[in-house]
Image (tube, rainbow, N blue to C red; front, side):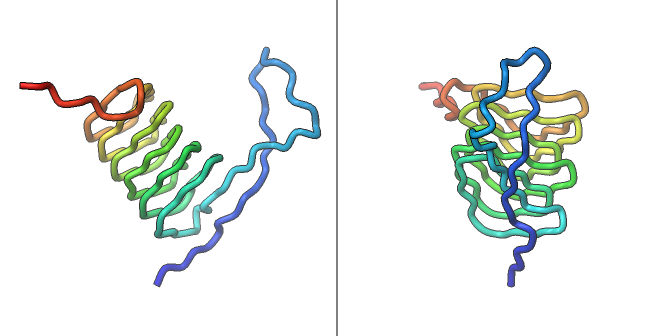
Length: 144
């Protein structure tokens, strides 16, 4: 039996960096972020278009156009295909991103990464292969 606890959406205001253009008018909705709380364990398939932040434990397949954020204390076992990925916690499985993957200094990744752009902070642990390609797909094997 799987118990799902603490999955919710919340709106968070975005703070633009210094020198950024003025923010949109107050009538524009703030982007929603779905959060799997640090006390939650979730098993199953995920798909989303916005941003999901995993702070707890997740196991399953992720197929999404949006941004995946794996928090510092999170543990994820998945093969994920996403628009973007930002990993601070533990991720076991392969990550394919259409835009970019960023590993924070606290990230621990065991698996392959395929993305047009990859940023790895000093201190991050990555055990796997990296394929940097323009379209987020692995390069074809050389012809013999």
